[in-house]
Amino acid sequence: MIDGFNLLTSNMGLIHIVISNDLEAESIQRIATENNCDHDGINCSIKFA
Image 1 (cartoon, rainbow, N blue to C red):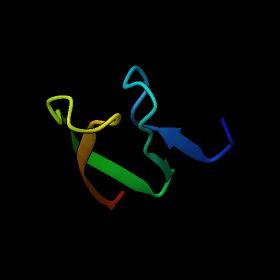
Image 2 (image 1 turned 45 degrees about the vertical axis):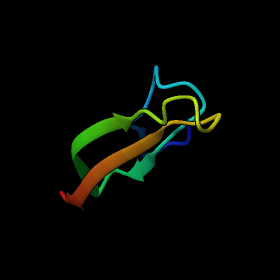
Image 3 (image 1 turned 30 degrees about the horizontal axis):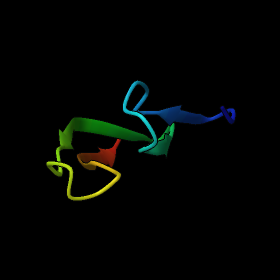
């Protein structure tokens, strides 16, 4: 990865959320599309650290 950034969604397939170190994720939730799409959605709350 790039220095100064955090990968929040390792082990979630092709969907990725990357944030800088001055941010913090409060929750990460995968939203299944029930085979209606080739990607699942992700819901994530992010705040300043």
